[in-house]
Each structure stands twice: as C-alpha cells, then as structure tokens.
Length: 151
Image (cartoon, rainbow, N blue to C red):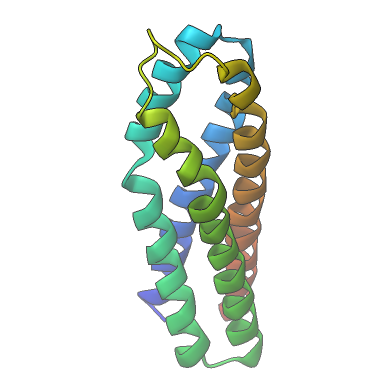
C-alpha cells in the first residue's frame, strides 16, 4: 500500500494533467491555418510521447495491483473502477487519436493532399482527446477517493 497508492496517484496525476493540458491546447488547432496546423500538431504529439503512455500504463498497473493487494473492499472496488477508466482512456488513444497522429506524421505541410479540407482531422481529434482526458481525470478522482478510504 505504501508504494502502490502513491504510485497510482503520481502516475494518474501526470496522465490526467498531461491530457488536460492537451485538452486546453487543442482549441488552438482550430484557429491555425491548415499549413501551420500539421507541424504544430506533430510538434505537440512528439512531446507527449512516450510520457503519456508510460503514465497511463503505470497508473493502470498500480490500480490492478491494488485490486489484489488492498485490505479494504472499497479500495479494491475503487481501484478496479480506476483501472477500467484508464483502460478506456488508453483504448480511445489507441483506436482514435494515435491513428490520426500517425497519419498526420506522414504529411508534408508544404504539400498537403488536395482533399485535406475534407480529411482534416482536427474536430475528430479534439473530440476524442476530450473523451480520453475526461476518463483520465475521472480515474485520478477515483484513485483520490481510494486513497481517502485508506486514511
């Protein structure tokens, strides 16, 4: 407990904070001209990887360990809920945001596809980023509640 709960709170706080920053910065994407959007997006994404996956996985592993190691049923249930929320955030990342990031990384900002206006992923990326950010913040709040039960 002395290591697992602080690890869950630290990693969860870093993940929630990182995703919250990207949620707050995302509206900038909609104000940028298309030619500037692609390099700005690439620049931001490279700064969050591998930090975000490491934070999310670390918190998830700590929560799973708490499910088995916590002395109180309430803590085990909260840790399970936290793990579920984190797994959901990771699923959104892997199935929605990462494919967009990978596609954008292949583009040359000086020679965008002729139909980029039709393919422009900004609104989709922002919508899914808000979902995964909300899931990560909810997981952090659940972990804080679990820590409160332990006190």
